[in-house]
Length: 315
Image (tube, rainbow, N blue to C red; front, side, top):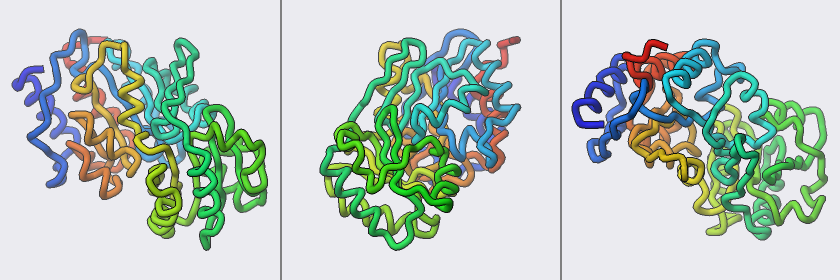
């Protein structure tokens, strides 16, 4: 996309999104390339919780309709989420992304078309052990979960923990006292997830990062329900998206990415057009090029219709 097209696209963005934060606009990023067909940007990637999904955990009808039109006009889209493969099943019943899905905060890429699931990087067994020990010593922890690409384990089975786990979309997790069964789980784990009260999230993140040291990274992935997660060092949604679009003919300049949490920071900063939701965490707000001024999840339908879709598309 030439500078004129980029300017006209951002004029449309401004009409939809309203004022930008002072840290949200960087003139150092390159222009998006010219897109063929009926879309200005050839592909979109969405975070789920707090972004594509509303407060009830659903894709708003307006957004689903906008995505169908975007697809009809030649666009493609995918999901980049901290959720596991099983945890995205309900969303896939509403929308039908045709690009590979980036799961477990970038640790897993699932190509639904071919059925292939690729583990980008697993946690080391020592990072798993250190993280579990530190997590279980936190003063207020609702649950500790260990995820592989296919299986999720939870360390407790009481009513309170199950309620919090259900709110974190991990109700299918199998109970495993101390997360030590089966032993092989520590060798195939891609993510350690710790659920704590929201006010304890930053403290828990610091404790866990100290425990795993340089073997892994710790991020707060859901700023509303306080999910603190440990993944392998170098793993994030940007690296996952990079792997997911390899071989598709898509470049970073073809994409718009949407997110709201600390685990979205790398993709919001690394893709030229990153859009943060109004309730974004300080890190993700600072990383994004643009910020949505309206905290209504349905505003994404307007962004898709007015920015991603070329107005000349009549479908």
